[in-house]
Image 1 (cartoon, rainbow, N blue to C red):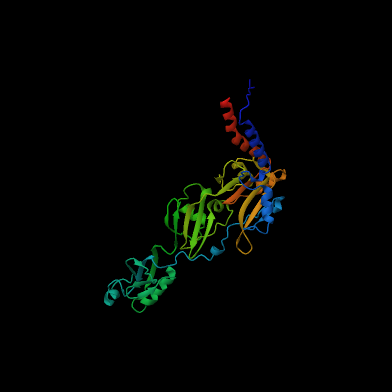
Image 2 (cartoon, helix red, strand yellow; image 1 turned 90 degrees about the vertical axis):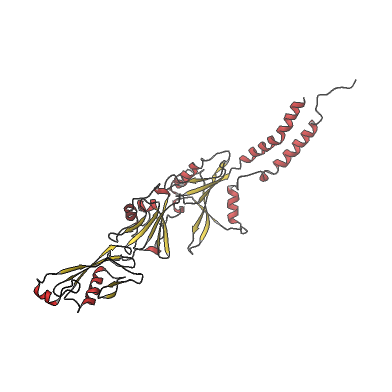
Length: 380
């Protein structure tokens, strides 16, 4: 009689395959799936002369290594001498009144009537004049008079000179009915968009935004763009209101637009998922950014490998890639992270922990051989 056995025929093959797979995987941990490079690999890439995009690493070891916070550049829109508030330009609508005594050029009285009448002044209020595109107004008897680039007082003197010899000592009064030259245009996320006449020509950005009804939406998410001729500058509204950047004077003819552009940073590496995080406040520190990213998982992330990728403007004005490295296994690093200010579009990378490679190996082995074990149990 032949002896019976309970051993399944594919058990030897299972053991051989398991052993072979274990040898291959244990010798190739470097080839296991990974969410990104380790800290050592990043540092090696910075030193490599063959790096496709060379970058430098800044070690955040003390407060002197923290990047200097520079205010927004406003060289292109530096304060200039404010023009007078009654300066005239094309498009302005003017009211012109002419006062005459004695022989009236505009009142219609004859010389005899003027001699017999009481020598009181007569006023003639002319219809409104719009300054044409060439900067002229056409005044009866005076002809075309240059108005653009002059104040109302200077235009009064020019009209009076033009009427000399035709009227007896005329007096001229010019006022601006509709101001176009001494105004700015506000648009975007503002309470009352449109044209705003500058009352004093001393108004700053925060002044004109308040005069236009304030901004709509959260201040931390707003950018103010000032366009002056062919030059422009973008400033965060929160920086203007807090005094972080210059609240400079606007200039007649400026176009001010308030746009919604929330600040954000990206998180990659050891965290369970890559994500883009919108700033919860106008200023966010590196410590807060790590907390917003979910903190450090000791099974996945390496606290020694906290990296922040950023483009920094170099001395030549060109952007250069810089990586800031923070080792949070050192207690002092937590103080440094509270003073490191995040910038818009920063990339926070948390390096993979070397300790999670064996865990990945076990996970892969489990995924490979769980079906085999289940098949064996079902066939018994």
